[in-house]
Image 1: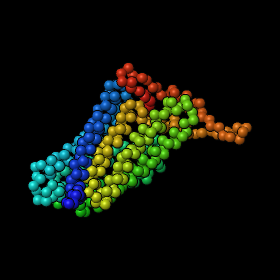
Image 2: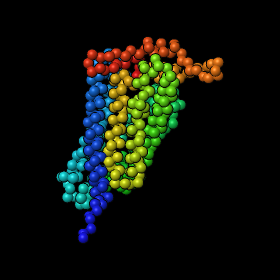
Image 3: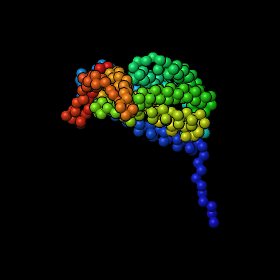
Image 4: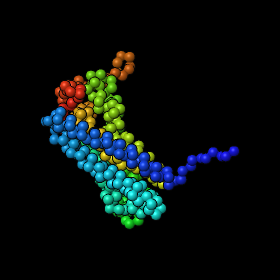
Length: 337
């Protein structure tokens, strides 16, 4: 009786599959990014022609991110097309082509566009953290130091990956890539923790006040935590660094997905800005006022929670929520974003 054949693919086959599925999901996420940008731009320019300049600046920022992501996705697609179709008979097969041509100029251009996108996305997240903490420089001082280290290591890795014969997934480039990825993930995790803590503290402050909870709930809900803090991006970054540092053949898939989220996460924030659901300076200052809680003892020696009605009145005067005639769009009109 013949023994059953056990399908145990080699590491090279696993890596090729990882490249394929990574590019597949990256392309799908790219389509979501395009939709998010176009929808945000349509909301900003059409639904509210008098939208603030800062809100328009967010849209232009999103256009720059989309342009850089387009370069990255396009160059990766072309490279894989050459690797699997045009030059699949190259010495060493598809992975041999990958090792010999990783430093080609247009592939280096794609890597550079990804890194610039990362700088911009991290910069936006750091600015949002700074704004949400009421412009406290001390809060973002340490993240800014990590940010500078991320830029430095990215430049070193870019130069190393551009050298003839270099391979992003093997050799010396991996060492620099792990350092860059680790610093980038450390920055994202730090900012994610700061923003999440800020939102949770604000949520705790207003959850007992029903009138405020109705108008401020969109700023402290689960969606706000996930998007404002870029939590999915940070989690994907951790997975990528672990798989890349251990030189696992599945690393390329997480690399493609993570680098796409570099542009997609800020695009989600921009979408919330366009729909009036994102934090701005007014929201940050007023939620801080809500956090100034007053506790008084009752005759039963229990504590009762009291919020200043002046703060609630101030929020009601600054926030105007309108229901549009088309699509049920909720619009926020306030001061600076």
